[in-house]
Length: 98
Image (cartoon, rainbow, N blue to C red; front, side, top):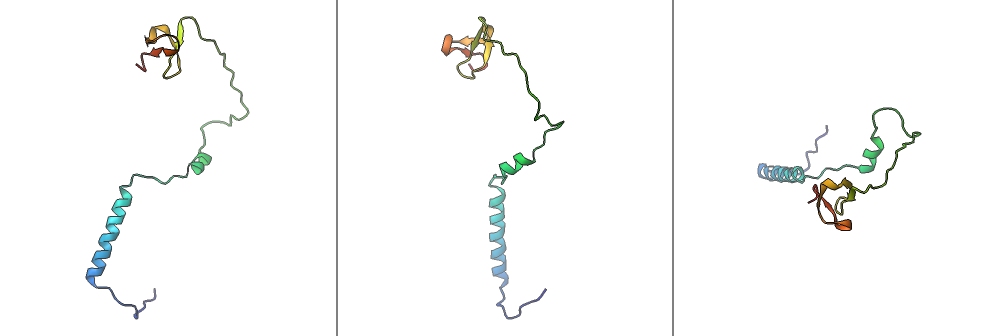
């Protein structure tokens, strides 16, 4: 590596001050708590285990809400009437959300 002997030299005090500033900057960066992640790149590189399921169709039998069931107005899940904490009809709330 070539050394330029014409450049002005820094004193020990200047070197010490610069190193303190660098350390403070590094500490602030380390404590920021933010992680730089490119979400699109992460999604492209995500591979699910198993075979390629792109050609598969999912068949599920959908059953309408029964007489002894209600829809929670907070979580919007269908529960059995035994899970009813309070309310009635559109204002019904399940025990999990109460």
